[in-house]
Image (cartoon, rainbow, N blue to C red):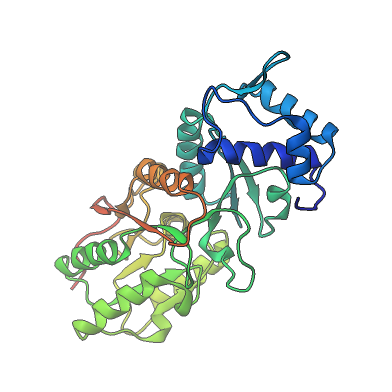
Length: 334
């Protein structure tokens, strides 16, 4: 038997459940006696007895003193999913968490949420699966649980992503149709970490439009002073950008608020776009032009992958995108 801090009877119970799941012991069949199981697993009979009692309590087997332990129902795993994200202030994660929690209840599962970068506390709570932000991927520290990442990661892993090429193409074509030829970009991440920025750069380069490094801004949505510095840099540039594409709605909303405090008019002074279509994005004083992809569909795809468990093949689930045009963009000024 595997040695760890987990009680031996739990290992015995897991072994019996695995045998039921694999079909070795079928519904209505009688399990081997306690002595046989103890010898087979090299554990004490009390450990086997405790395991049998635990399985009986779960309704998986029925103990009949004159017959033995009878398998009564198939083993179904309870989904206990951990959700780990560096910053829970990002409204996108709150919306996805709500959808995941709702769907997990239908699978008799539960969601445990934690902010931070360390997954050890979550793993020690008996999780069966994990959902992590893409920034938490590490090629040098393999995941010990079946895990799916929200966003693109550079290595071999399960991922749930929006159709970024389509989404950025929709934003780009919208701005081009409005006459914008000087388009800046803002993100919390550096160039090499941001797939959306890479796609935008390729689109601009294909049309031979300017892509100066000083038009790529790295700023956090919570850094109000940083957002104001970016807007001042845009406003004071000799050949200033007329549109600002943001990595997500959270950052775009921060710029809309900063612009209002600085006396900048959105969109007459600067068109701004987001990505995610947060619920609040339609309720702003200047409703946000953005890219929508369904959080409900994302949650469904996450659960579908997690239910498959740990397999040798990793899966990337892509969620369709759709441009939502609102009042934060308008035709470029001559």
